[in-house]
Length: 132
Image 1 (tube, rainbow, N blue to C red):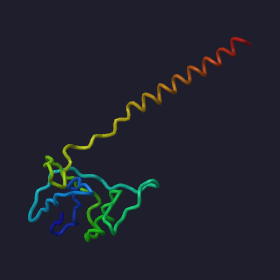
Image 2 (image 1 turned 60 degrees about the vertical axis):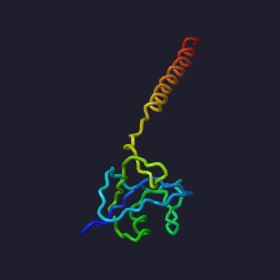
Image 3 (image 1 turned 180 degrees about the horizontal axis):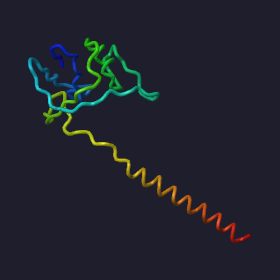
């Protein structure tokens, strides 16, 4: 999204299948985008390498994506467009906000597992102490 006297903002308009039969829904003129802001990601050891020439990016890096699209120095975030999904029309925008991670089950397993292991260790220690 180009703006007057301001850096461009990259807009994630939605999901597009690699093999599609329908053409893309191209936008022109003044457009209003409703969505949420997504911060840039950092590429990690196990992240696939981005293919800038093929315009396939596996890490959300607005600077690299903007350079590949011809927009140097875009904003350091991406706007993810939201809206209803139209059948057989691409891109298909996000339909709801992302959920924060829910790690409660792993927390329960971790802490109760530690508690059970401490009870077992105490039982082994108490058994040895009573034998002596």
